Length: 110
Image (cartoon, rainbow, N blue to C red; front, side):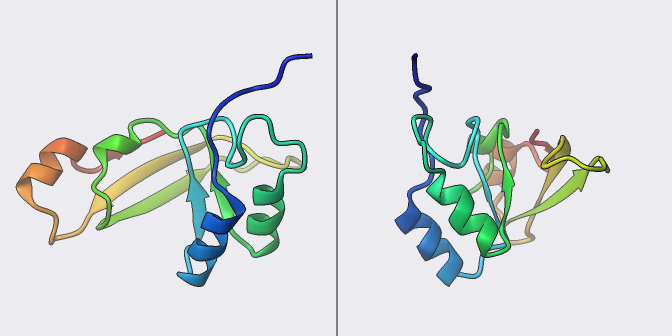
């Protein structure tokens, strides 16, 4: 049977991000683990450390590399392991005008 092929976070990258005290992981692919993963090591490491995962995000390239604050608004579902969210990116006061134009200001990044 075929396997999915898309990039994901490496375990080493997640360990670095944990050291930097991040709250969660976000990506524009189907999973924070790479597509052909069978052990889901990134899921186990991140979720085990209390991180949340945001998958299938759109337009991440429009955000600056730093200086954005995300607001994640989940839909309350009972008994599920995940669900849809709406993600808004707010830019800091130190973001330059050219970065705001690139990022489109605060907006929907779902």
